[in-house]
Image 1: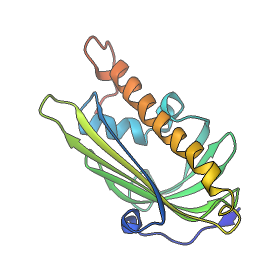
Image 2: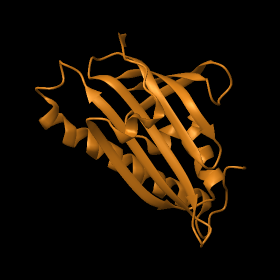
Image 3: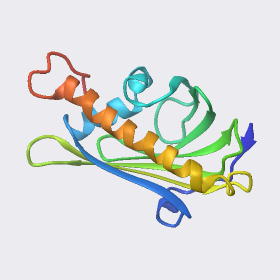
Length: 170
């Protein structure tokens, strides 16, 4: 594993590279938060997800998670865990030397019609090894996060949208 530098949640505001995806999602902020944080739902919306497990502490602030995609393994540290409001984690280890710092920040805001406005920001600092390839790879990473956002919208529509027969309990 390649070690990454610790990264405070406010790195999303100053990172040299970032993605900012926003969407209106069916479900309350608490329901959408629960889908985003539940490992058992991850494969339904995040591309290339393989598996994850909590490695330290129960899910919440201070917890760590081993997260695996088809092409990458990450060690995530959850810094902010405010159910239905705000979630942020940073990555301390990665199986590929792509970045030196990485953080994800999710904001959940209720809408007037009972759905959730989600703002999902991903911020990172490319590693020395990635810099020459970054202009070519950045659009692929951006596409994956856009696809994940669209998949989350579709998945929550099935769970909580009009005519949904089942949902995740809050």
